[in-house]
Length: 437
View 1 (cartoon, rainbow, N blue to C red):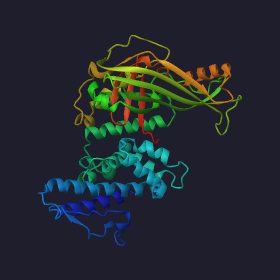
View 2 (view 1 turned 60 degrees about the vertical axis):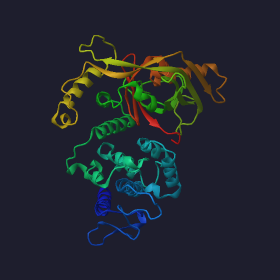
View 3 (view 1 turned 180 degrees about the horizontal axis):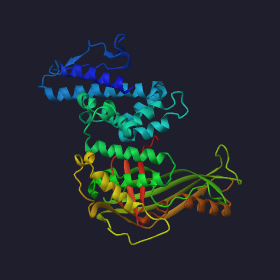
View 4 (view 1 turned 45 degrees about the horizontal axis):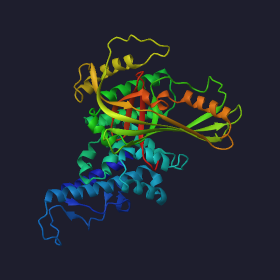
């Protein structure tokens, strides 16, 4: 499939190199040669010249702007073709209509994977092969798709740069990735490990390692950059703190966590104040055994608070003086981060010789919290079951989701991912979601 997308990009790049834009790129206009099995772009009758002025417009037309806009239009069409070829579920008109609605609403394309995981059924006949293809090479396919379908035309990638992209080059050709692509790869790898839900010591060490790497490469260390990116809905993926599973315990009430996310909204005055709501939905199952269909009585827990954004710094202690029953993986993670950044592969992109003594962070100063809980019938009036249920939910969910005052700073933020640090040093890893997901 990558070869097909590469052949398509080569054909479109050939047209663009001759000063023409196809303007009619669709899946129906592509042909596969019976001789060499290469992609051939057909119907060039509507091709437009970059340097051709619009006869209906009397004003002078900037040829460079016209060239960029026409190339951007063709690249958006290439993005739609690539999405349909890789994600065969988009051949369904209903799913493709949702996909186009997601784009027209102005959603951030870094959340495209999060949206498609909910829009595309997991038990589809395609077997989610397309999602697996885009997940390869540290999520390079999702990055290429996001820059092909970027809402702003000037933000879309050109054909020549697309041919140099790691998704089309693959592991056979060496590519010098940009710092943005390195951040994307680190974030995608962390998301994939967190989605496996198998948190052994090896997985936890790797997750702590990647979180430390992301914090070193935080693109927005100053709080003024957080004002526009922080508001939104953030789904909790992982916490580097203590984990309590269900296999070795016999809880008094069977509780299945459905969703855990933060909703951050900007308050009008003052500008640096945000309202934060922690939403946790769960299902309480009656009886001593787990239901096969995981059915039960639904419940919700909500914690509301306000945060003020301030500038701060996170200090790195050289000697660990605090010991606990559950030691943190931070010192080992920092040592592995330094070893990785000092290697030849990373030194060219990130000239870091040693771990800095401190990093700029966005300090979060919390206010009072309000807690609300609701249980559906028939358990809404049973106080004993409600107390046991809330205790089990608090056992499975990180304590920072209940007491928001324990969250003290934000160490990483981009359009897709968010990392918050608590007072005990553990990191909460979030992924932005859209309202449609």
